[in-house]
Image (cartoon, rainbow, N blue to C red; front, side):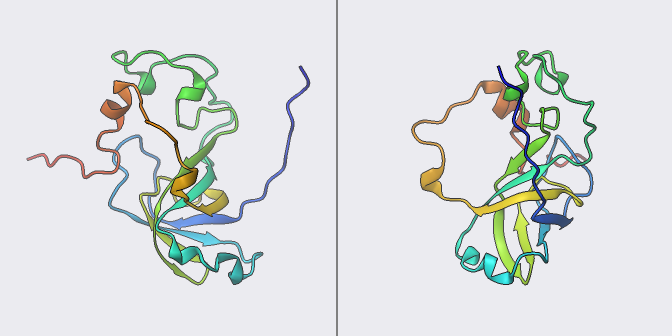
Length: 163
């Protein structure tokens, strides 16, 4: 096997408002702002307001490069859930520490993309922004193991009110 290919990529934007701290739990109810770099003319955003959702590729910039888990482990270390491999988890413990999210685009103000349902935190470098095309999404029936819905059931919804 040949050595892995390396590429150098430059962030096209950064999260400048929204969630301040990473969390495995509830992520809804927050408006985030993704600010596009000044290197790109505003016309690079032309037509984007016509879309309801974006596809964002970002870097877990607060994670340590030494915190990569190349082995099977239970999600969130919960023994009730079966051990699964590195590429089954969607967290920072991946080899390149990249994440994706599909936020709802609320509006664009100059270079600022106002979005909600974005789980990247303030300071996060954004490597790519594109509109979400449903036809390019999953084809056929989508299914996941039960533990996924159990683990993420309230990820975007309001947490339960405690008295």
